[in-house]
Length: 160
Image (cartoon, rainbow, N blue to C red):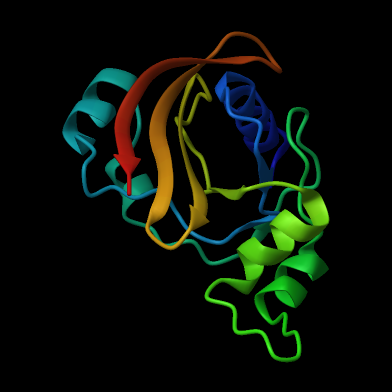
């Protein structure tokens, strides 16, 4: 991940009011484009259609977030495989996050998309609190200066 991507995620994190979650360290997918107006985004803001079509080939790791705790990458794997004698877990990851971090949810970010001149970006996050419990947004952000971004519009809001 680039410094621009990390700054975007930090700036978006600063706008999220809920502090009852932990951040997943891994980014392994692109933003969901199903409900985006790609034609508008390309003509009005300078994104390129190809940016929304290319699949992500790598997994990126978030090493720092100024506003929320990041789950240790090794813990992510261990928690998903967590077992206790005589106990059946519907969601061992959420059980461990609550037990070891005293948090009720985990936030997943997707790989941000920026215009070529880095003036605008689209960022998506999803916060899940277990089966059929979650919410998230795809947001449009504008670069204010070298390190700072501002959320200017929510493009899609999702809830389950």
